[in-house]
Amino acid sequence: MVATATQIQDDEQQHIAHLQDVFAKQKAAFAQQPYPSLQQRRADLDKLAAVLLKYKDQVAEAMNQDFSSRSKDETLLAEILGALEGINYHKKNVKKWMKPSKRHVGLMFAPASNKVFYQPKGVIGVIVPWNYPTFLTVSPLAVALAAGNRIVIKLSEFTPATNLVIKAMLAEAFDEDQIAVVLGEATVGMEFTSMHWDHMIFTGSTMVGRHVMASAAKNLVPVTLELGGKSPCIITDSASLSGAGDSIIFGKSTNAGQTCVAPDYILCPENMKDAVKKQIAASYQKFYPTLRDNQDYTAIINQRQLDRLQGLVSDASAKGATVEPLNHAGEDFSGTRKMPLTLITGTTDEMTVMQDEIFGPILPIVTYKNLDEALTYIKDRPRPLAMYLFSHNKKEQQHVVQTTHAGGVTINDCLTHIAQDDLPFGGVGDSGIGHYHGKEGFLTLSHAKSIHTKGHINSGKLVHAPHGRLVHRLIYKFLLGSK
Image (cartoon, rainbow, N blue to C red; front, side, top):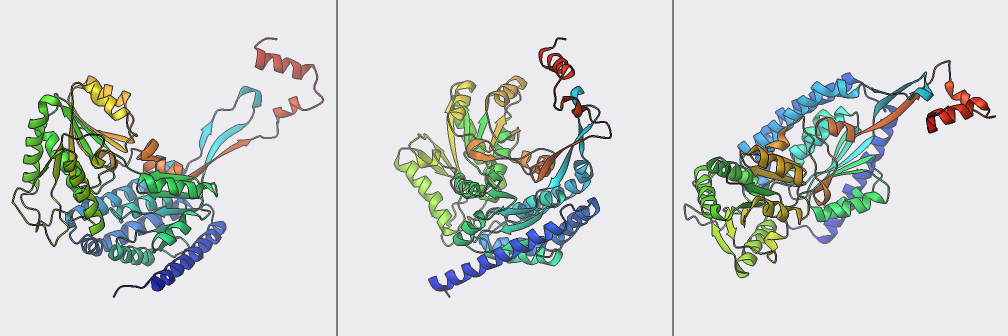
């Protein structure tokens, strides 16, 4: 049964009322407990890990329902295992992160002590996208709990079955005055971004990220934006082509390319183009000999996204590109939302596929004459969330890392830098602002409060009025370097 416009509006108002209610509850609860102990934080992380393990199969089943076909192994690896690794990492390290850091005291202000005290910010708002809803719920949750905060999560309307499982999972382990999940569509999203959070985390497109930041700015809410962009994959003539092919297929075909750090396009030397295409096709056939009924290969999330992707292919073909779907088994995908990896060569900047983040199984291959030409191509475009380099030449590696900007880099593999818990993850420029993984995430969701402490002896009195010869001598000594 299709909901009427009135029913949708009523549902949205109920979700907004729920949002406002849990926001008020969390603000009040945080005021009563503004600094959870180390023991409390570790206990919360233990509860999060336990309930995630308990619900892992339900999560996988729900995601398969939402996508129409979502690889269970991908869900368990990327969503469950990845999140559990992060929880354990935060539990192990939170003690040393909480410890105030000592800082230097200038001679003029001695005797005294300086330290930085890491204080929870308060109530954190988290907006989760549809592509990895469990990981992108639990990962910021782990950081926020380690930093001592309370959290409200807004889930995407495009994963309704998964949303219900996540909501039940977290409700089993936590009261809503600590962790709450809100549902709803665009109206709820707009209300969410307009609220006075102590910090807000958004994962999604660059276009929507601009709106989120503009809305947050009205309340001076600090934001962490994990966006995306066109993440390049550079192959040089020093690369292992077979290794590069396997890694690129892994990065591009995990979740059918619906990943913010998926390789968006390949840059390779002109004389390697045919060899690269051949290797990509061979690696793809090795990983996915069939697609339609292959439980390892994920479908596109909905018809709207499938239509968008097919439109990118049609636009490129109409403008003169060569389009090659890698449908090795000659399967018919009608009645499904499966889409084979499609190679595109002969692209131009006028093609939409080279303008917007692809976010699906389409892989343009762009050629270059020399490495600096490839790097100029990257630098002339918005800074991407990720960059991949396939090279076994140390000088090439150093040159690429030093002369380009990207949120993060993996050399001789794809995606795996995001799984390193001890590395910060975030974008730069159009691909995002800030970090929320590991120690950097703890710092992002903590207020670094400066504390300057004097004892019984206060040297500051020496510069109190009325000023005399001693003050003048201090001025000359410390400012002018003379007596």
